[in-house]
Image (tube, rainbow over all chains, first blue to last red; front, top):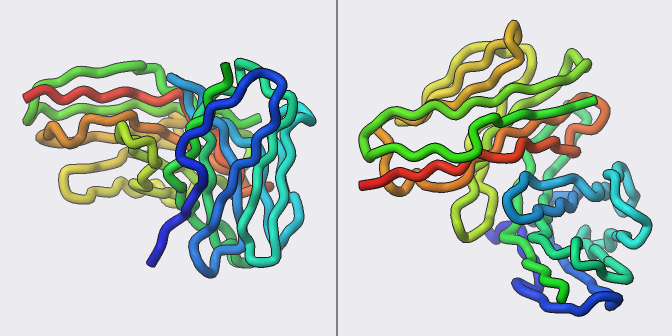
Length: 115
Length: 115
């Protein structure tokens, strides 16, 4: 079975540009979460989407936005890029049930470099 | 507020030595989950273990073992007879009842196992 996939693998942008990152969850998973991992730090939560609705948001500016599509894939958009947005962006999928928590499976990430 | 602290930034050991990675967490929730993930140089987070707050039993999986102590808010990870392939960054993470898909990660411990 395919795991979580993300595209592109690497991306180079300049300050002020906009970027769109894509994530396809594991088949059957309905929840997608996005994390930002700056070099040398742990991942920081950005968004969680479940059944196409935003269910959680981290402490990130409005330049960051996301959406989830009917097939449960997701896009993360970042506008007006800053040098500090350079990071590894990780997507995670899970299959939440009413019974409680399920583990998250992470994709390989998209490495964004802002020049 | 939720917080995870991994005080050890980097640890170096020689192959076959035992090594313990420390994790201390803070949460006011009575229901929460703790995790350990491994991040090799490729960048993908690999799930190692999940514990819920009601299960303080220690767990052993091959050369890996975990010690969960609610009294000290710690969830430590021990690798017995370390191998070069264990070299990676290890993250401890916490998720709480109000949003189990929102993970709080520690800053990670980089483990170097030398031959």
